[in-house]
Image (cartoon, helix red, strand yellow):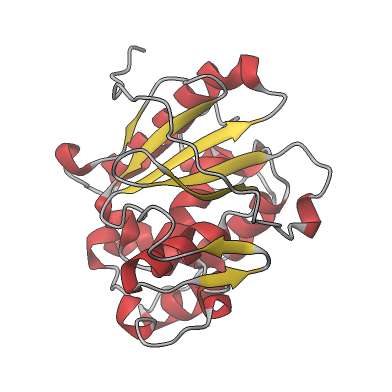
Length: 250
């Protein structure tokens, strides 16, 4: 299959020597890492293994909040402003550089398949770069920035798809590079069923709930898994967790 890619310049790196991340569960492990980017391709904050810092950074950029959360820092007015309309991210996976071209194909196929099923217009869908050294860049659809939990789900989808040659969300369950993602898929199943039923356009934004407070930990813990059961129940969706890890059919 031939894919079209966005021509992308290398990231404009920032000095992150002041950042001392606390990522206990991933300490010493080779894992995919994310980096938030500005509209101009500037690095915003440190590379991270914990993807929850992404929603924290978008919140800080949206509302002009400087914060420190588990050692991750965003300094509004000093650091570049993160892109808050499109979700622009970079992904690298140290030790897996030779596999990066195939991983880009896997992620692109999986994301495009889901966005097509969610009826996101082609002009609004996520775009991808080729490999740039040891990383690649994702230009996430603006629809994924609607809420903390949509960002959380989208970044889960990206990471979980790296080894997913099946190209569909159903096959992520047995192939994620991070074991936690199988847990997230099981326990976030209500959210996945909600997306399948109502689509991304009808998911309500929750940014108004967070615009006045200054506590980054409320954002950090506001991912799709934590909201899954509540949102599915409010929409009248009854979710049955699969008995086996490879049973993810809709």
